[in-house]
Image 1 (spheres, rainbow, N blue to C red):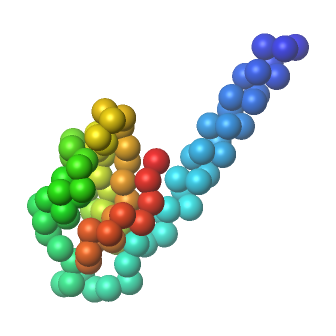
Image 2 (cartoon, helix red, strand yellow; image 1 turned 135 degrees about the vertical axis):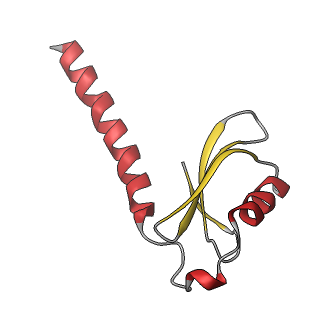
Length: 90
């Protein structure tokens, strides 16, 4: 019974974390794609903030960058493709 409760709690916490990330599924900008920075420019701006970018993509009007922060931790960043401003992270 205790193992089941612990497992259920772990699943609920993981779901809550994912739900927070899911709320970032909305677009980061409503600007037309012609106003977006290139993926290379977005990556350069994020790296200038001290992140090491491992993978970057544009998805649903939002930049998604998989990075390593200054402390060596993995961080997924969501950025506005018009300015490279960080609008969320996991």
